[in-house]
Image (cartoon, rainbow, N blue to C red; front, side, top):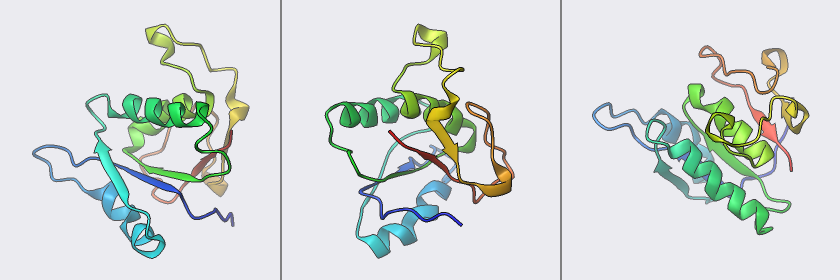
Length: 136
């Protein structure tokens, strides 16, 4: 089994309006309570929040603010591959003029054991305990 450092930053997707879905927040609340690291849940899954979150984190990466740090993101499973692409490689969406990152899959490693996926791949809706670890 893999082990990870205590995160410096915790991100969860924001509650979806009119659905009251708090799954991402509920998933990492025990870790937040034990570590004392607050959860930032200001990025929605369906309003471009994934791209905005990736942009914020990439900015921190490029400024050297996350060197040697661990950041945990708990997000809607359908949005994880695009978010991982943006974070692992610091590029934009290739459909919107960003770089094509399909050949750079080695930037992402899955630690989900038998649930490993190729990169960029997809996140299976039945996987509730998988983790993709991105290292810069």
